[in-house]
Image (cartoon, rainbow, N blue to C red):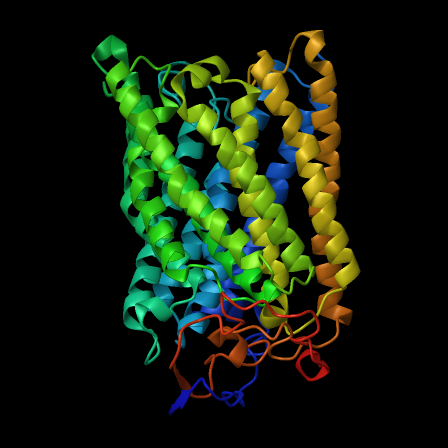
Length: 557
């Protein structure tokens, strides 16, 4: 291929799109095309998302009444455990890196593919294998330990299928590590000529920072779960206090991974939101350099705050003070990002298309989740609300409200690029608004009832808490409806949707310079990058409405 500068339009590839390059099942299951592997990830996480959703819908139905009339204690425990395991490790962690990371990273840096295409496919097979092990645990009778597998319950007392579930998560962890290694190598080795580090789109920076966390933190989880399996199966004295083990060691190891894992979920979401907001506000990202430093700062500081999950575990009070301080510190780079997104919106020519509505929903939900995180970083407040539904609400605002909103924002933003089709705007906007209200109806009452003292994981509760639980359960079914709508109208768009041009949003970025959907080779010529990202209106300039008629008929057709 020849080099072409991106100051002009790149020639469109003459090859058929990646979707037309083979229609057999084998052509998909043996593919090494990063875009097809992204579609495989999308199908996989969608399957797990709805499985986890069904489990928690039954839990919320049970919580309509204080007596827990629908489910037995045992079934209730297994359902919320299954929901947590599936959603965290088979949806949240691989969702944005596996789908948008795979599809967009090579496109955004002007590469043909990722650095190790076969390893990329192997990563997908690993997560499918891990998911199969976890589903076996469900079919064989379920697991009742909670998604944290806390010892000594998981190693000494539970008589459910802990080994199968832990093995599934263990295998999925290696998928995460392999994906991280691949993305790091791709970013270092395959950038187009002229694509310097500070010309990278923020989504690429987010995937790069996330990959570092995945590679450095996930092995700790893998070893921890292996130790759980070893103690349970071989009766090795690791966490069992009867044989000199230390159950607190498990919590240290588990949360050393699991708190950075929050940033494995949130950092890619931040990358998506940066791309969407700058496009639909028609303004350059405010403080690009600070946004990069903030993402790297979150990735680094995230490794030092695991102890705030253990304020009531019996750890040293001096250690708790240090972890409390560091937990407040990690909020600073997150606050920088929210401030810069808001400054980007200020005086922008905002267009309320569906991706932007999802992005605005992310801003609201993530901000609430972040602010309530400060409550949990404070030792006295954390002691009061530990193991209550306040904590459940907090991490759902961050991990579900934030990550899932960003996932849908990215899905609607890049859908024309991925499929070559447009979707019905009205339904997409309606689903975005419904999701925002459904989410708040579901989880905001849990802040209140948690503060009043309702424990998490209980399905029998005092009658005075019923109003909050009824509100929360009713909101959950509104939220479920909002989650069901996009698969319906996006499937419709695949069949009857209008064909999209290569850049229907008039966005900047290399991915919009090629055809929709892209060819197997991505670009007809190697792009040569001559300027930074986001060639929208500069920070100090406020565009007038109508000045930038970016949705031209030529682009959309």
